[in-house]
Length: 310
Image (tube, rainbow, N blue to C red):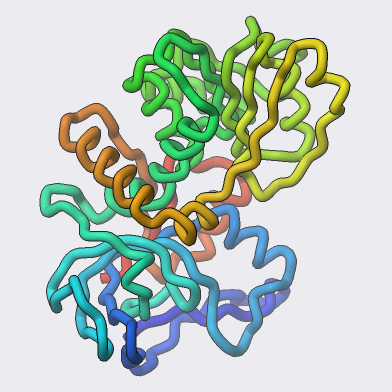
């Protein structure tokens, strides 16, 4: 099988494609022949931070594919089942090992690319809305609104009844895209004002934008922080308006409430099947992983970035 080997980012060719033997599933594992795998900001941060070792297991991430073999003790899956989810290592390959609890069945009419966008990005977007106690009629602002999770958060806010949806993006060239996702207004991060206050902010960027998001809240407003980008908030800016900042981790929910994850994935499949959720993606072959990383690092992607492995 073909697999990406990660080298030093200072190397002339930081990514190599190796031919290696497919892994063998151990007890409680699935072997999945991948169709698509995701490239995310998390991978870019690992690469630039030097935390991807040139030897040993490679990074994990999202994938969609078909079950090729079952390890001892695995129940609820059969060879040939189409599945999507997250694996913890070596995802950039034509075959991966997966924990059954971390994957889910993919409906037959959903394309691999759409499924990849929904199994993680859609799940984050929907769960962030729920964490923010969103109610129909409320106004919602989404940062990183053209990202894999962000563009789905814009669509979900619109389709679930938001009274006003504001998309915040880095540059004006993404305005048409996010309007096509359902945004009523588009603001650029560098603008002095982000317009009228909103009830809920979903922040997928972090850093200085966390405080900008708090400042954009109306009284009793809530900000859900779901980025790994960090950031600080002046507690005094919360007091007068009775504002709240809510931390969110899809990983913790997956670990503690797997049944809730399945319910939300079912909701996403239903919304997609009804034509109310339209994942956008940019697809490249596995050997163009360097270009995919550049798309993410330059923040020039529109929707999910993925690599097809077949």
